[in-house]
Length: 178
Length: 209
Image 1 (cartoon, helix red, strand yellow):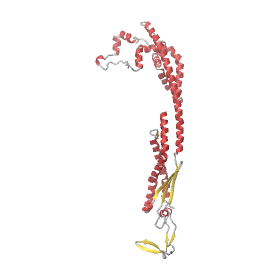
Image 2 (image 1 turned 90 degrees about the vertical axis):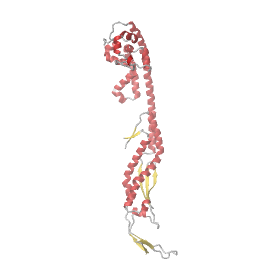
Image 3 (image 1 turned 180 degrees about the vertical axis):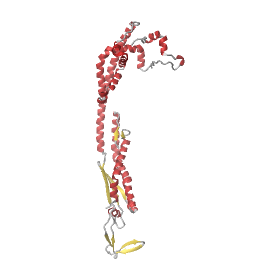
Image 4 (image 1 turned 30 degrees about the vertical axis):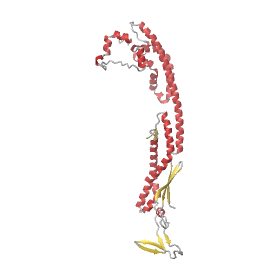
């Protein structure tokens, strides 16, 4: 969309300057609101869809959000965050995104309170205890990273379109799309 | 550490752009206002010349009226203007005499290079200069122009028309708001020529070029 300025008289130039003052004041608010709205609609919703398709648990999906937006005078940065900690303190969200290697899990060292510690697993309703378990690797899916790359252009196009429409609305007839 | 993936890009518009735009608009507004002042000044100059010219025409018209009364009934001769330009062009010059600014604006519009190259202020200045140039040309023909005007309108009528008090419609069509007072101008001309000549200084010059 190309914007074209329509100034028919000197009064229009003065009106244009007044409208520009309004735009200058509202611009930071508009940017943060629009970036969050479009970030949620275009990028985050796509990440959630992909996670669902890949069989991620709802807790991981709910833990994936558009976190902070950093705005400088020339750039913006949207942070997409994903985290879900198990009771043991293991971040499953990171494991699903970045994957894990084959690894072993050992039972904690004996203490006076827990002199005989064991790992406990529940498989098909049966409780299984072990001192050591070998765990297979989780493949890295990089859903968040790839989705950001895929939707980046759509997001930027939508943001530019929204910004142009906002200019047209705030210029009150002095700017038209061509 | 949780997953933290950024999406970053440059902004197309920045507040500094708006400041620059505002600065440009301010300069444009200032420049345009100066130009507007120049145009108004030039327009006033045109109006001043116009008023001066109309006064001249009025004075000569008064002289002509006296002359016309003296020469009433004598043989009608073609005028200098008609000899030079022919009756149709002479009529156009007459229009120029009654509304020189409008006439010259028409000239300015008709000359193609003016619209493209000159700004409005330059056109106004051009009109003033041209008005001055043709002033001497006018002096040769304004007697004729005013005489022709006086043939169809008395001075009182002219004043009333120009001030918008009276609307004068000259038509050959018969009829009117009240059918009983409907008349045909041709019929009146044929039947009561003497009265018309007396009231409106109209003489039958249909046989004259």
